[in-house]
Each structure stands twice: as C-alpha cells, then as structure tokens.
Length: 568
Figure 1 (tube, rainbow, N blue to C red):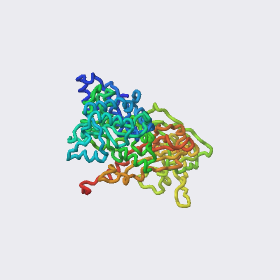
Figure 2 (cartoon, one colour):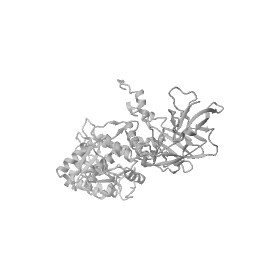
Figure 3 (cartoon, rainbow, N blue to C red):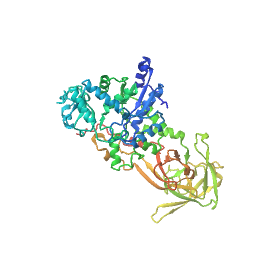
Figure 4 (tube, helix red, strand yellow):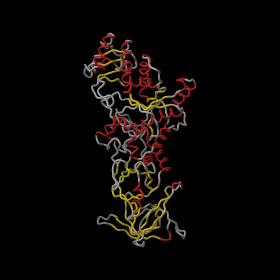
C-alpha cells in the first residue's frame, strides 16, 4: 500500500537525488527490521509508515525482516503480533525475512574478518572489557589478547562455535581503534557465546552475532538501498560502514537516521512498557491505555488515523515531543467520517412516560450518519419506559441548563417532546426515576405549533435495549512528560485512566457489533466492542476517544509554570 507522503522531507529528497543519478540502478529497497522481543508501539508505526511509504512512493520494495539474533528474548508470539500489526496498518510484504536466515553467511563473514586480521577472540571478562573501553573523555586500552595470531583466533572461534566455552569466557571482537572518539568503534563485540535455544534454528548454534554486526550485513545481503533508522543509531553508522567496507558484500546500503517519535502523556520505551505490564499497572500488552499497536487496535484506533498522524508529524532530524491531542484529533477526524451513530446510555436514569399507552411499542427511524445519507437509516423502538443519562437531569437546574428538570420540556432524539412532571427518590434521597409526559404531536422531534425547545437528549427503550459494561479509558499519565525532572514515571500514573461502568443500556442494534468496528454513541464519544473480554450475553464496550479534547481545556486552566527553578 502506498502511504500518503504529500510533504517532501529530507529522506525523500535524498532518495530523489539518488534516483536522478541512477544510484543503485534506480532501485529503492527499504526494510522494517524489528526485534521480536516485544509488541510494537506507536513509535514503530512511524518507522513502518516511513519505510513502506518510501518504497511505495518510488515503486520499490520494503522487506519485513526480524532481527532475531538474541534467542533469550525472542518469542514466536511476538513474531505473529508484528506480522499482524504491519498488515493491520495496511502494508503488504512478501515472505517475512529473518536475520537467522543469514547465520551461516554471517559466520562466514566473521571468519573472513579473522583471516584479514580485522577480528580477534578476546578473553577479557565483561567487566574488564568495560574498563578497557575507556570513557567519552578518555581513550580505551588495547586488550592483551588483541594480537593473537590468525590461526589462534580461528581455532578459538571454532571452539566457541562447537560449544567448548561458557558464556562470557570468550568473545569475538572487531579490531578497529581503541582510541577512537566514537566508543562504538573501540573494538566492539561482534559474536558471543549464548547457550540458548533459538525459536527457528533450535540448538544448532551456541554463538550468536551482535546487532551491529547482524544488521548491516543483513541489509547488504538483501540489497537494501536506504537503511532508515532512528537517531540513536547515528553514532553506530561509522561501524555500519566499516563492517561492510571490510567484507565482500553484494552492495553497500546507505544508513540514514531520523528523529524517533516521542508523545506526551505516555512512555515509548519497551523496558518501561514491560515494567508497566510486569507490575500490573496495566492489564497486559494489549491494554487499551498503552501505546502498543495491539492496545490501540483493541481500543478502536483505525489504521487510517495512525497513518495520517505519521504523515502529519513528518520526518525530521531533531527529536521533539508530539502532542497526544494531535493523535486523538487524527482519530476523531477519521471516526467522524466512518462511524455509524447509535444511542447508548452509560449512566442510566429510568423515565416513565405516564400518558404513553401501556402496551404500545412503536418503531422510529434514525439516521446512521447525519451528514452521510448514503450510510442509510435504522429502526429504533420507543415505549412507555425509557432510559436517559443521569447527567441530563437536574432537580434544581441553573439558568443555562437546557436539559431535563422539574416542569422542563426537552426533545428526545428522533422521538418526541417530553416534560418532567415528578421525581422519585430512594431512601437516601437519590433520584431513581422520572415521571414525564409526552406530546404525541411532536413525533420526529418537531412541534406543529412551532414551539421550540433548546435541549435535545439521547435515550434508549427500556423494554428493548441491551445491557453492557462500558470502560472509559483515558490517558495513562497525569502530566505531559511523565519523567520530567528525573521523576519515577510510575509515580505519575493517572488514577483515573480507567473507569468501569456496569449496567449500561445500549441500543439493541449493537447486539450485532463486531470488535474494532467503532460507533459514535451520540453526545458521548466513540466506542467499540472489546475484542478480548466480555461475551455475547455480557458484552464490554471500550471508549475509543471522547468527542472533544477535554485535556486541552485542562491545559488552558493549568498552564505549565514558567521560570521554575531547576532541580538539583
């Protein structure tokens, strides 16, 4: 699928220049290379849209390649989830590729480096390697094993491969420059012993290549022309180029870095997301409050809204924080166009219409979308007993409250004018029922005598509605930057990020709802059937997003303080 990339950015300009020069024989081949050690999040969506988008825009190819060179952390469930997420976002690919497909070739490349005197087996411990590496201001020191002969290195490396050594006893390191100002070039480890079974290669290997060695050579073997990655790999680019320059690879891909995505009111670190899951602050990786693609999908986010968001924020070389409100705005824009309207009462208050015939039920017509007649109409039923929202009644309403109150008349959406005549309370004084009358001449919501009412409220038929649980999801953190000032992000969790309402009354048509199909509950927001919890007899609906951005109003009331003293 071709992404919408109307706005040119610096990566697109580089590709255009390369094509103008017939570089790479006019080909554009990119890749999305996730490590299958967790679930994808909204930050990965930016990389997916960019890599597949550039390939689509220039009639090229984008590979989905799993960087599965660390068997201790990788699982098939993550592989399946990643494949599903890429397809859900709307992008097509051929057979997925795996770094493990190249383990034999990578081993050959390692032998080639040893034979050229460009790699050696080091017997320093991990702690000693860190000590010898130096710091940002001090050069490193050569390993005492750096000058081993080619023959000794080949023998030791073969014995590593044959399982004769324990983890950490020996490593294979590239021989570059221990005094380089770039720490990544100070003889980095390119192979290590790891006694772990691999999901795809089983127990065939007990040595595994490191990411920096695997990634660039996998790119070269696949003929990648433009290796697009986030800014954190900018300092790794000299190593990327050095490894390829030393070896007889089929091509030399160009690594280009772009700023990664940072969104306020959330965290996008796999480690921190893992902490939220492990400590039960959320209910699994697909919790609808998380920025994981599985969580967003379950909540009701649409692929189009995510693609549009990634297009709007663009591609730059400088890190910045994106407003969560922009993502939600993209979602609202899409859902406003595509979501059918229904009525649901999530905090029900019973209304009895005393002058409506006891045994009568009538059928009314309702629009599925007021601005889109092509979406058709549906039938809704009306009877003597209905439910309205508790918030739509006040016993002592203020002047500008135009909904129900004693003696007040309102319009029921698609139905009649009703007037509140009496209030029934329980022993605690809580209002539990309204007694109203209706005007039978106002069917459809208009009075033949021309009288006007300012309030229109939604409702459902008490005798013909479905009952459901509704979960009101909100932002997971209270502050824009949960880690500002070195705070523990866990302490910034929003205690109101989830509110569970039971006994909600929904329009009967929602009995046919399917997961991921989003509906607008009129006046309340956008909701979808939960794909994981609930049942046909006890459905659960998730709020995808509110109709308006309540957080924007909150930010205006409580703007960030300026000139705050820095914490020591």
